[in-house]
Image 1: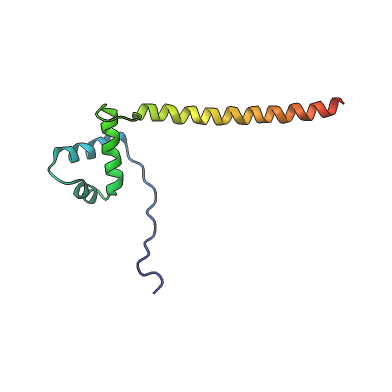
Image 2 (image 1 turned 90 degrees about the vertical axis):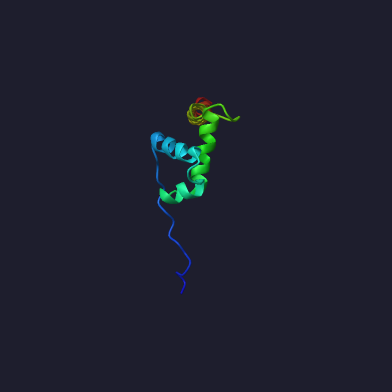
Length: 102
């Protein structure tokens, strides 16, 4: 009884940019609805709508960060986090050695 209605979460999948582009193109043609395309390819409607939205941003049809800008921002955030950690380590090392010399 307890397992009724509970679905196991689907493992996270990744898709190539080419596949996403094909799905977006299918939706833009207008032959089928976004929901139907998502169902046909076993995708979530939300994911397909996000891909369409991102494609519009990349094509400068809508305001927002393009895919390349998003990738650059993510890389800069990673680098910033690493540099902050480096500075923190150096501060602790400086405090440690300052105690040693007193």
